[in-house]
Image 1 (cartoon, rainbow, N blue to C red):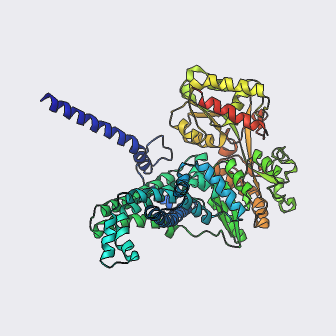
Image 2 (cartoon, helix red, strand yellow):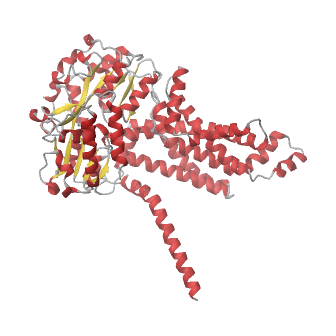
Image 3 (cartoon, rainbow, N blue to C red):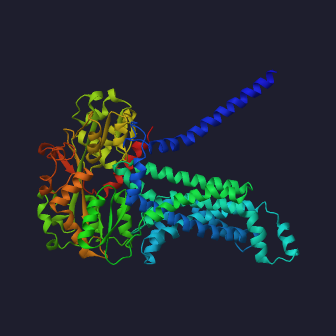
Length: 612
């Protein structure tokens, strides 16, 4: 009796353990799905049930086009990978090759080699072949890493395959091809289907490789989401992720029923509904004009220009604007350095402009075609990264500072607050070498562009001393973490904090008295741009006071256009995070390229993050 009770207790314990594991695995998915119905744009509070985000998703052309591109790439690469992988698995199983071990190792390489290595090597290969980046290069890249997984899955099935069934079919008069299609492939169907589903999942989820090999008109959903993280993930992303999850779950259910030998009509209902959900973007997302003669190819940060503004430019010039997104200056640099990106206008930060200028990757501007440059505040012109604005024009700017909850911390005016033990566990720092070391350097009386190794070493020690107080290092949704109340003080960039202040009056933003950094994002034309004249027209268009004011009011980032500022509503014009007072601007320093010291910054920051 005691043994039976002990066995029951073990079963209950194992059941609870399994339940806990499943909750851990699937709770984030449940939360994501629930937030897609949250009336609030912020994930910090629940304000009621709504389908509004699904309706807005259908109206969000960029997200729908990104989903459409993802599905095209996933479907095509899955079909090709499954065909090639199945054929290769059958060949390896049935035949013995010279140096077969070497061939098998080649198929296994994409599984074990880091994605960043595959991505960089593919970019170099495409550049050597003069192959323009686009959907074709993305599909080829996805086939390159997906086919190995199909080979592994199908070969595992073939190891237990009964060859006598094939022999029996041929004894009964079936030829090799009929045996293949009537016996071999049906028996391998579960493994082939599993390999195809794995290839589809890997393709639609890939970010690293895609970010390197994507080009005009080929922004996929992961690229869209990662880019949007810079200014906060919109609830439309929760909605599209939920729909994608539902569609793939229905397809998996159909595959499971088919594998269990259920009737085809029973499998047709979930499969049909799943394919219907996936087919929606093809019907609702219009085709890209990437190959059209009258098109402008724009490569820019997410939420940096409104669709309505682009529509005005399209109507005025009778063109189509293709918008592709990136999430870091490093991604932009890699794409332009490859030399086969085909973009007309790009949006690098000031230090990236300096790097691109040294490498002669930007087209000198025809300033006579930019009369609206006269509206730009001279304070943002003729900066060291681009003397005379020979290669770029200012587009957006902002500061780095501290946002804090007034009710929790009281007034804050110094970087020292981020080292205050009273706020232990409630401090957020950017996951950014230049910004975090910059804050420590400012407390040491140095500047944010410091190159002296001794001063940088002291900054590292200061950050190591601070680390026990820090809850997280976050450069993505730091404003959302502050809004949720998980931290009380956060280092971050003014544009995102301006939006957070509009959502919660308890949040205040300050540029510390010791000083800080400010960034300047510019628009430039790459060398080899296919439509340089149209690119100049676009640069002049965004500098029109009315257009610049519209962009600033919509995106909430600071415009360098002094004529546009007078056209803005008072709530934006006087916003302390968007347009700091003159005395604040006197103590901020533009982040510049520090040359070889960049390596030292990265090494010191890695040491800080990896320290225990």
